[in-house]
Length: 363
Image 1 (cartoon, rainbow, N blue to C red):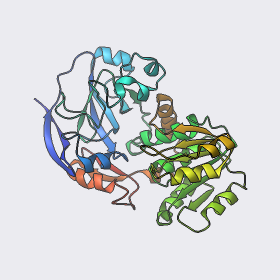
Image 2 (cartoon, rainbow, N blue to C red; image 1 turned 90 degrees about the vertical axis):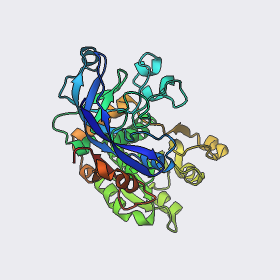
Image 3 (spheres, helix red, strand yellow; image 1 turned 135 degrees about the vertical axis):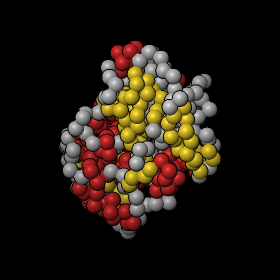
Image 4 (cartoon, rainbow, N blue to C red; image 1 turned 90 degrees about the horizontal axis):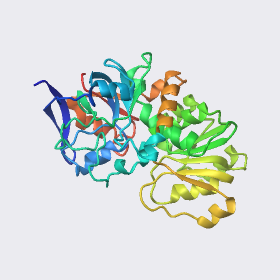
């Protein structure tokens, strides 16, 4: 039986190349030939922990449909040979959240759900094993969520779709951003830079990116993407610099892409927000918040949590237009045999000079 080469995470900080059989398909599913898979911000964390091994990591996937059942073709409105990007969620397809394209909120898509499946997180001991993008082929479950990629869109740019969709969700959709607003973004990683591009796309009046002094290269990328101000959060006079950039009025939309859990970013976000502003906060776990100040300023509060289908569609449209600076977000290329190196390179704590890593299964 034909096989697929895959980089399987077998334990903490370790992957091994395995040959896995291609699945026998029905009329209801399919097989994707993986072209490229980005290393997401979550992948290095899963790699360090190793607690879901054995697993094929990777969910920022671009590929070509290799084989397809007739029922699946009608459902997804695609044909063999079409290029697609996938959302990582495998949801029920029948609830109100799925009907609205918000698959991330479906009860079946939550990690504690019985029979939970998700691309990049489901183990190889769950048939047919090919559940991650760090492989030459990927199994297309009947409840997969596919988006067709325009033929003119290069794979390396298309692979930015999901991180850009996360930014679109946070910048445009959660706060219902309208033209002429001031947007303040904390974090100069990939999502922060994508947030700059999303804010520019929505005709924000002022775009301010805050990062660390060591991230000057990323500041230059942010300015190329449309940021009007880039500020160092670890420099003296940071609060005064925000006040000057917002002309003392504060920001209308404040986005945290840092996943900070200490509450420091949240506190600065609240202090920097205009009256009636919307805060879109990241962080994992409990974050201390000054509810008195939130109430006094009449601030709206939204969480950062993945992306809906509308965000993915907007991200693909933005990428197809090739906005200035977007090409510089393409990642450093790695082969399957270099998966460990790719995951370490994608870890900002280990390789702060590399914005993004990409795995190319056929390189």
